[in-house]
Image (tube, rainbow, N blue to C red; front, top):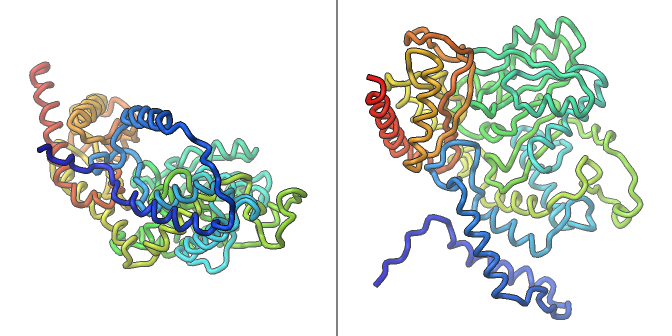
Length: 464
């Protein structure tokens, strides 16, 4: 008798989806029966099996052995709630197109606002961090027209693009050796004048660095700029209890920002795309005001389309986020916070192993859940080559990491006698953002160690 195949993809929750569908259908039982639009069951199955076959050409983003880029599987409740909503396919632009889902969006966004300390706010969901940051900088440009926007040189590259799209000048500010905005450099630039908005990053996408908000807020008192916080990646980490002291100080001042972006599709356990933009002052809604004779006629209540640059938006994203908050509330010491804390613990555990191994050098202790390290070699260029070889060898062993080019100055390369023949070094990077990663750190390290030894042996045979 053949043994049942072990389950890799979670499928048990599909039973709950059928029960929920029956519950949804019962709300429309006064309607006459509807003949299914799809009668070709065999054709449907054939196409879906082709889709499944095509999707197998992917890295295993859902598995703990995928520890490379920022790809976190949605929670089953989010996946099911999104699928359930698709039988209705609501549009959260106007209440006419998404009555229930629009209310669910308002409630879900209010919970994110409360998480950062705002009882009053203006905000909504959007397609992701890029669109959310665009809205925040668009409002900033309305308040300070023509003035320069600045962000650190480790901030997300979209800020420069967005500023160009908005017709606003943009400048980069140098970082310190921990990948955080250098406040002294910022002050010297502020002294020159012409800056309307400072973008602080709370959780850079490269290494998860947290810009020093307390020091930036002190500068705001003196120079009066608008402060936008891009917390697309790191926004939820304020809930955990194992942050380092400096990072905790920044999270404790998050509520003093003028606008904040957080991406639920990163650490909020949501499907793509689900970003969120928040404004501390609801009065910025005046910049969105417009009249539309055909979408707003049916209700005097606020339509989300009245406070959004996007028009049609998936109500299913709001339904999924609302359901996730109901199951996993955004509270300190709750289950959601515990899972997020495990991600940081996993990063610290991996960092400790790497730091203790003389074959590698680390940049600095991770502030969130991203670890970056590089091989030790005679030259920077050689270290970069070794990193790429290890990356490939680890992938052959089903461990998927990422590569990143970082300034050599972020590493103490002199202490290991490495000749600086390049200004950047190709590093290995691991994002330990899955709740299961803490339990998998030892296995990840074992595979990585084996991959490294295999590369060393090949290089020794070719280059004694």
